[in-house]
Image 1 (tube, rainbow, N blue to C red):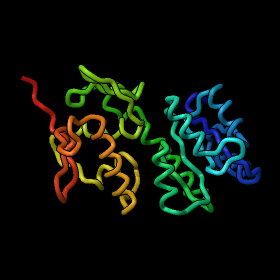
Image 2: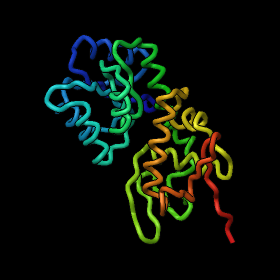
Image 3: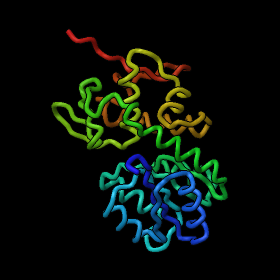
Length: 234
């Protein structure tokens, strides 16, 4: 069917891989499997997937290496990392590498399904402002994940593009961290989520602000969140 979602499972444990495939196919997803990083890399190069479930610990090429390599090469396909490591720093590292979400083993299949659906909702084109728009003096190109003004052209991550997009759609009003996390990450804000937001905003300011220490585009409203002031046209 044309409207079915195509998922790639990258998992070296055969029983887990088969179980995930059966479960997802039961829920009407189209599923392909890869047992190691090299096989996954070849499959991603050969065809388009709507979402990738990527195990962190893989033979030949690790999940971290794959995620980093794919994002560096411009792959925008959503990635959910599957990891047995529950430590907070591993989760943050996975998000920093460019994954869209993570889930710690052992997990319930119902939780995995909910996370898949949440990530797919985030990339729904109906939620987008547009693929090309202005954000202050920057022209944003979401299709190529680049921003440019009269003097510079820079790459942005897909998450940074989503953040810019949300502020652009909601100018001149305060956006709380709770709202930003729920709308962009599609999750409930936690202490980890708060630090994740601040980290992304700081990194984004380093790209778009003339002086990130004194931001003029995305400003902090102490105790309330952030605000993007859209300049009125003369």
